[in-house]
Length: 358
Ligand code: TXA
Ligand code: MG
Image (cartoon, rainbow, N blue to C red; front, side):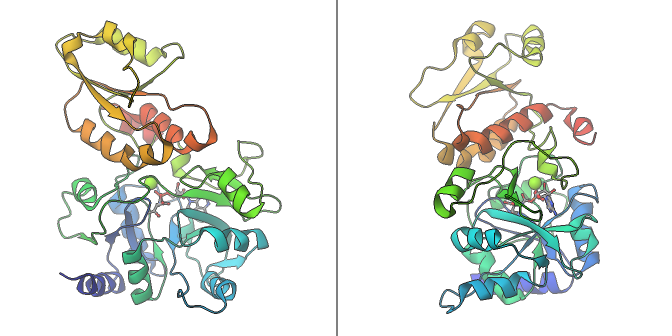
């Protein structure tokens, strides 16, 4: 099927109130017409996501030959956001379409099932060309979380989406190839007075935003009381079923020690280490050397993010007793990857779904 045919089929899926998976530059999304409550409900059911966890609405970008880009962005945002601060427009000018989600005060039209009943709404314009074509042809907003079961690893290819929803063969997947960034968008709250606040680290770092626009992004947990809900901020998320441990210079954590005593020498473990560096010695002493399979990973935050979810999925399917990954270095450029790995580690293991729902 040509791209044109797939897009027209995707538009009819959305118009009749069904779901479809679509590529973005970050991860694949599970999309529905954001103005159709029944369609949006289907996302929660298929994902197994709690109804009070809000969704991001994906929006078309102005055409590239627009004479008045900012005005065009304002008219695209206005049906969804009731107040658009200047700082948001400055960020949009630099980073949209792209992997940045902004949380605004919501308009009257924005559905409660999209916003999780909150007074805010998350909006982003993805840069993936196929999804931009889809948004243009559809003519409305598409509500879409990442196309994975709740709490599990996000998909960065069409095949990943298929393997998440094997019992839903009829789900249409618009195949846009491997995702360029590989982890979810950066989320900023611009709905309150004062500096924009970072809700989820992603491919675009606060420093990059500051360098490009002069805007200072508030990071850390200061004043997070009453903050909007972000399911990506649950302690356990993005999780494989195989136990995942981060190793590094720090003392071994209790989970790791418990695992060490339970380990039988005959079982294989996966160890991900930094390309060009020695793989870690403590694991070698812990396990029979033959039982370790080593995987070099790029020590570059952008390249590591690109392969992270694919790596976790592949390792999770290879029957390892445990997966060990080197703790990412300090520094803001690693924040998004470190955040995903820590949550994946916390949520990992066969009993993880019960932790996730707590
Ligand atoms: O890169 C991405 O952002 C991907 C692609 C598909 O666009 N989407 C994604 O969606 O990661 P999801 O639902 O897996 O994560 C979006 C996060 C959720 O944790 C949700 O709670 C948060 O955005 N969110 C949505 N609306 C919000 C709001 N009004 N206030 C605060 N957080 C919000
Ligand atoms: Mg997600």
